[in-house]
Length: 448
Image 1 (cartoon, rainbow, N blue to C red):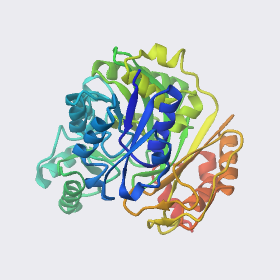
Image 2 (cartoon, rainbow, N blue to C red):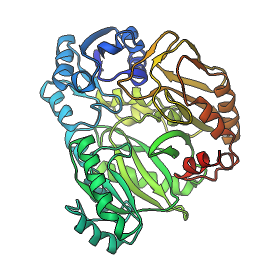
Image 3 (cartoon, helix red, strand yellow):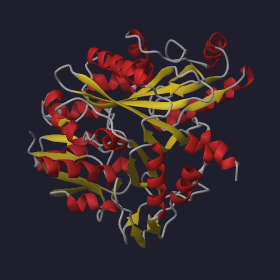
Image 4 (cartoon, rainbow, N blue to C red):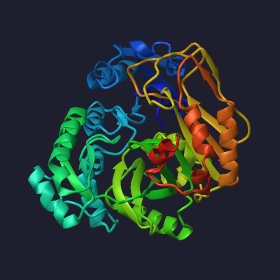
């Protein structure tokens, strides 16, 4: 096992990794920007090193600074959390060259599965169903138009790199395509430094279903079941749950077995998430893979009792899945996660500033992952996520009731948050009935 791990992240995920380290008896090292000097991940780590000013490029995304901190602290491994450097194959290579274990997949696997078009090709090779689309990057609007005519409108133009909904445009007819292609290309180049695009058929009114997997360094891969992530705004997830009301036990096993074989064949290691669109006939289509821990990983932890972050660390230290899991995966009850963001609940504008009151809820089946606290400050430089409120109930009805109660007892003052939005979603009859898809939020907001 490792002696010391550097956590190359900030906020609640950095604190989450530090908790896992403490339970495993591993010393932790936090890195922080000048804006995060008073953050909880800095307070609770065994050591902390300032790596630069608030701007991401000069701190958390500054690879030489992160590696220098790791070498100064003499760590054995680096856990990248999610976002930031977590899917950066070059960073994983630098870790290897510095003889520091990167807690994640090997660089070549990050490259294969991190670029969406390469991942599509790999999945297609092993029989995983994919959405019909171009055979690779489309080099021009004219080429995109040729593919669109073959595939059939509507289509979606997507960036090969990155995520979060950037570099994506839905095209419903030939006249729209040239302008939307250029918009997507420009946005992708600006966001990811890579303007390459590909084309897929646009699946109308789909559900967004993702499967959590773990793979060890001995060729074993296991699926821990699915999460329903259809409640999203502009491709940003707001609420996740497990299991999905649309998933059958047969489809869950069939998909899990298929993914285990496929990812073992490509040499996948550590935690990962495979994302699918589900159409009205319950057909799943692969769209992308995230080669890291997900924001919504607590949903799976709540229904399986598997600590995914501790599993990541143990796997990176060479443990076999059989030793990590110590038995078959068993799903219990129903879990829901609400992402509490520092945003206006109706305008969706960021709300940085000082938190004057912070009263998180508790009680049976309630979990809070957060690095926020009363008198703490939400800086304007980073992601707006301030807390993840997660509940488990014996079934979906109890989980919804418990989440509604917990949201009502969650008090945050001094900044705007999305708590009121989540309370409205939980009360919506269509959501309660499980009748929703990725377009739910747009329809929901239009009701008001």
